[in-house]
Picture 1: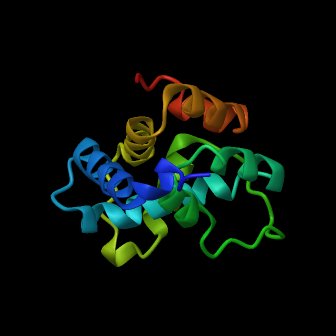
Picture 2 (picture 1 turned 180 degrees about the vertical axis):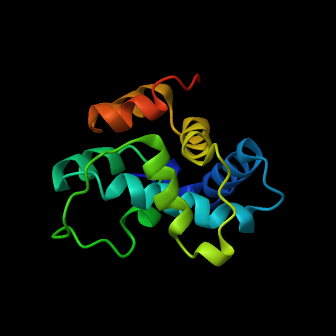
Length: 142
């Protein structure tokens, strides 16, 4: 079997993802987008069961998948979905002094994922999410 293309282009897709997140959020650099991206992925992960997290991550590009799982302890308490404002505050709490997350942080990360994940895979990733999280990204066009 040949080397799968998603692994061949992992760094290119990750750069595309970070640039899309940065631009959608109106940030100046991908460095500024870093804590936003990590914060959104971790906030979503905290609200997923092990099975949901695995199903969701299975649709992510390899580098984003690694970031999604980095530092995760599956035995941690699963957080209530809560409101978009509560999730955004959690995103902004990650390294607060160096966090430039915009008001559109959650949408911006979803938009960026939409740019690097084929539509059918993005739809499968949404199906893995609980309804409250699914709604945050369901309106994003391809």
